[in-house]
Image 1 (tube, helix red, strand yellow):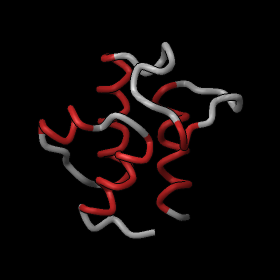
Image 2 (cartoon, rainbow, N blue to C red):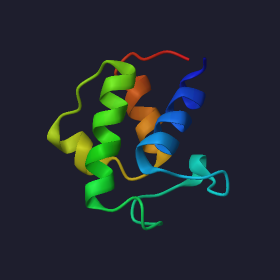
Image 3 (cartoon, one colour):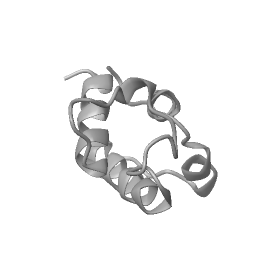
Image 4 (tube, rainbow, N blue to C red):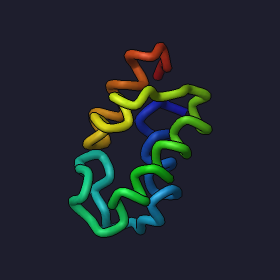
Length: 79
C-alpha cells in the first residue's frame, strides 16, 4: 500500500473521520477532531503505523497531511 494511502487510513482511524473529509488537504485545527488531543493521538498512530519516532519539533510542525507525508518520506519511509 502506498504511503499516502496508509497515512490517509491512519488519519481517518486516529481522528475518527468519516468519508466526507478531504483528508489529503486537511490542516491542523481545521476540524474539531484535530485539536491538541487529537493531534497527539494522530502522532502516536502514525508512529505506530510507520514504525518511526518524531522529535518534539516534528510533532509541533506537523500541521497538515502533506507535512506529515513529507516528514515520513524524509525519514526514509517509501511509497
